[in-house]
Image (cartoon, rainbow over all chains, first blue to last red; front, side, top):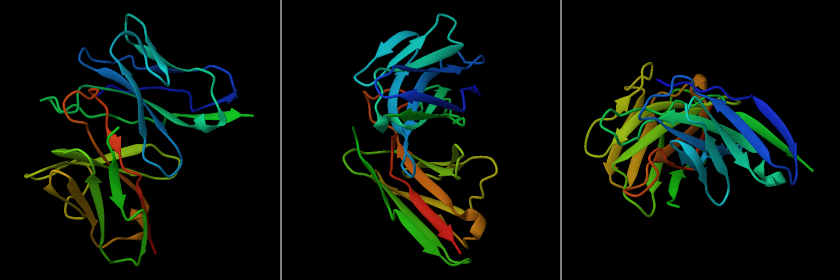
Length: 114
Length: 118
């Protein structure tokens, strides 16, 4: 199963852009890259998902190079409320016949300072 | 997005007792639900996959007789921790994937249940 590597922690300030990079050297052809956010004592929340190139939604952008061995989550103009743990996961579709599972790493603990 | 609820949000019990945790999909049907456990400062660990109308699939190392899972309907899955011990104290989270049209690896997570076994 694909494994991901992320920085354990990051610090930022309000209003800055934050980029969190994730390495996934063993990503498989049918794997998607998915990012989640988790606040203390809460369930994770889906942020964004991509397969290749760039994906953007109302909260973040996801950049994926051509070789797909890494990805970067970009959070524009962070605020204090963005302080959380961010998880990068790779895997196939949950409901796919091969039942690929999502493996959760330790995530990146982002601290946004005033 | 879709809402998944869990009940109770926190429970304290004595060692040796059993505790049932409910996971409900409030506005969508979920033929599959997932149960996770998370220890402090650690990541989520998938315990089992709950399938409506059939037996749950447990991950390696998870005792199926200790963690009983019942997916009674398309909106309800329950996890029962039997004969709980202090080492079972953890944060238990359930999730369900969206129906057709959702992102491939998107899961809707419940708010979690904090179990403390004395």
